[in-house]
Amino acid sequence: MLYQMHEMQKKIMGPLIAFSEASAKMLTAPGNIYGQLPGMQRMAAGFELMYRIGKDYEKPEFDIRSVQAHGHELPVVELKAVSKPFCNMLRFKRYSDDAKVIADLKDDPIVLVVAPLSGHHATLLRDTVRTLLKDHKVYITDWIDARMVPTEAGAFHLDDYIAYIQEFIRFIGADKLHVISVCQPTVPVLAAISLMASNGEKTPLTMTMMGGPIDTRLSPTKVNDLATNKPLSWFENNVIQRVPANYPGRGRKVYPGFLQHAGFIAMNPSRHMKSHWDFYQDLRRGDLEDAEAHRKFYDEYNAVLDMPAEYYIDTISAVFQQHLLPRGQWNVNGQHVAPADIKTTALLTVEGELDDISGLGQTEAAHDLCSGLPKTRKQHMTVKGAGHYGIFSGRRWRDTVYPDVREFIRKFDKK
Image 1 (cartoon, helix red, strand yellow):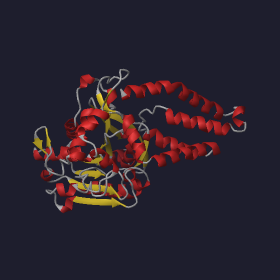
Image 2 (cartoon, rainbow, N blue to C red):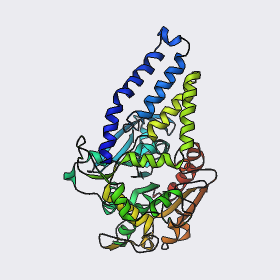
Image 3 (cartoon, helix red, strand yellow):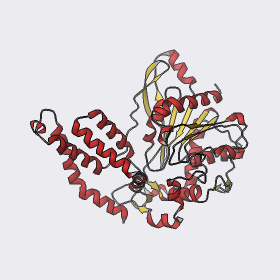
Image 4 (spheres, rainbow, N blue to C red):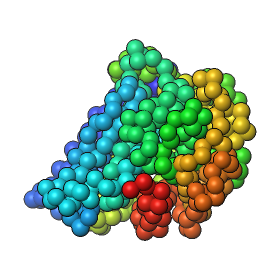
């Protein structure tokens, strides 16, 4: 019923939100003399703030149209390489008509970025992808909102997630691929590569794991506490909802994105309240540059997706409550997950000093698990002053983290 009530609230508030949007646009329209009257700037700012707080945020676009690579500004086209019921693997293909540049592009390492399925869309990694495109061929997992997946597609478990990753790796070719996992997927990616190694398959050249919950027993955060303070039955009975009839996935059990978003906000409500107040003040003063920065951030931050209930419950149980991977007790489809079987895939772990989602040491724990790798194939970096998002997006990612990631990939690339 919670999901239905949420949809009903959206419909009830719809006319007010539409009125607020129209009023804000009218009062700020060029040439509108009424917008110049005393108090109108303040009123317009209030209307836009109300609109942005109440509006429905759709999935943003990656919107990567070009990139500076090999000394040239190259056009980029977003292609769908593999289509699955719950995920598309996208490729960002760079183009050139210069023979030398074409040859250089062919020699660039191939990277698969595994985006989190934890509430936000893969577009949250837009800056990650754009930066990587300077020196790499880039693929990314683009997870589909579960409310948009018809029930005929069946359930989606954590084991299915792992199978998807393996399929994507095989599609590209493990012996020429570098895998980068950001946050949540560090666990299933490590499992996927471990199982491939145990089966005698070729595994990727490198795996870079950034800010992920490999072992949440180390430096537990508020996020970890939320997942462990309640029994599994509490999550099943209180946060799992059925998709309403107005979506393709009607009847599917999901963990709704609006609940995950509420959890994000609850972690630091004062910061978000201040941000919205600052946005209002920027609009009132006419500081359009800062106001636009606010819009861009929250257009991404407020756009959330529903997760399949089976996958969500599996993750809470296996990763956060039972710690199956670091305890060596994880079985996937009857096969034991043994990271020690990885012999050739070089490992880089990246952690933020101030990460409040995956605490220090949680990602680095992968090094102890991958005991079959020599020290020469292991590397770790802790990014000073960086929070969770800073290790894969923004100035610290571009100036501090990316150069090391690029050199690590180049070091182990066959070319």
